[in-house]
Length: 508
Image 1 (cartoon, rainbow, N blue to C red):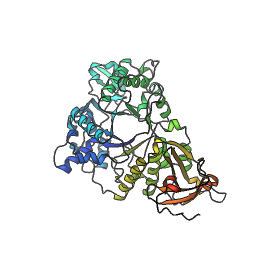
Image 2: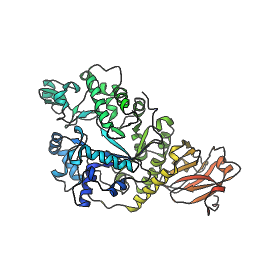
Image 3: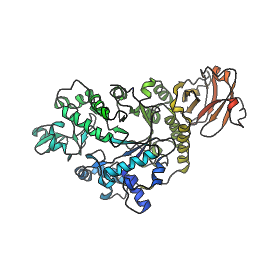
Image 4: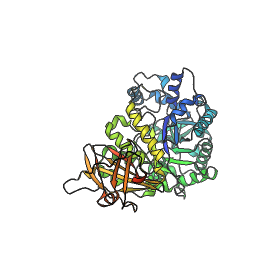
């Protein structure tokens, strides 16, 4: 199975912490609110121009057993207090990734509530994305009693030797969930990716989920690949089946839901492998790390990857697992990075609260977050960016990186990155300065229609227009000069069709 059925253009996803969001709506409106009770104007607020998919994170029934374990973990309690100093036990619902059952939690409105939410989103042109956790389930999940063969198991000696890695249920010793680089998670039971019954059961659950949404985000998807699972569990997992886990499962699900979108949370450079195993999109954690910690050259190198690969990535600056962007990026750098994220090929993921400049990452166990003063200008910037990119249609076109050239005595171009989008309706050009100092560059544009006429470059974010000669834009290339962390998102139009008032700009 390959990822060649990927939809175009790639989705623009807005992640919402469902429990926190509904709690804030209840306080705002002074009444109990489930998903079926959300006022229309609140759905309207999620339907941001340029967004086409809403990820309601954490809707499934959480485990009471997992919650009790969370309440006793001192390290977790410390993280709760750090995020929410006045936290109480009432604010702790347990982890949304410690799933008791794949039915919508009754406190959120149950199955009927989710159906109402999906309908409300669909009326606003939005698709619905939900979670699935393939690697583990809660310690009180029904499968532990009904199907112990679905799990990685141990023996009494394992339990006695390492109770942090094993627990007993109904006389069966079961491994706690883990990945190969960290200690076991105390609140979950490890599923066995090599067990034939588990594979079939996973496909059945995902098929039921596919009846309730338009896409599924699969948690830590790379842990189920044969290579990783065998290295993690060795002989305890048994003999690896001939077929990989994900092609089997996704193939079965798509027999019923051929258009269901599969998104993988993926790390360790496993993105291409998972794309080939059937995922439409995989997290681009590598780009996030490069933007946050590495050089502009490292970012440009990342963007030279094969386009088919890039089209299957999910670009982001934060999500519920990462620190808030406002807490780790300089404000100007965050805006530059956002211009990149919004205009690169692949899916785009934004996180509720990111646009307002929230700085506190709230542990997913909590149902409440602290009040924070919003940053109106940041919200305005993001809304303008998303709306402009969405309205332009650029992401429906063909993407190509553009070289940034300089001069022997001025290599500031090495801190810049540029790319273009082309479609029959027109072209767009994006250039971003990924450093804290001013930079200049030439951008040679190999567009056949450039010579013998003049062109208007209109910035979609500011409305500023520049007139340039087409021959010069081709060779030696369009001259650009940007302040530190600045950028342009240009629509490129023939001067004859440019809007009135676009006067020729001064040449450098």
